[in-house]
Image (cartoon, rainbow, N blue to C red; front, side, top):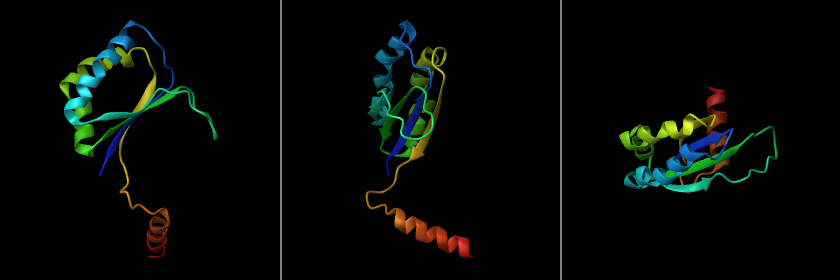
Length: 114
């Protein structure tokens, strides 16, 4: 099942370090079969407050996503971004292609009844 590395970049900005980070990040992702799915678009806020932008990178599984994040190659370039951009990052599992939220609700109801 796919896993995703998601970053909420609250203070995106462009400078020499961030440009170097962008130049080098793909080489850190490729060995883990990752690919960008969303990268820094202007977001349309439909609920709440969302300062900044978002990045979503898909990996084949959580092991690959975690392996990428903890890799020496990525850790080497990470400060180029974190020194200049405030944000949060998470790794999360996706859902199977046949995921049904109604089924999930049914399972939650059963747990609640116990």
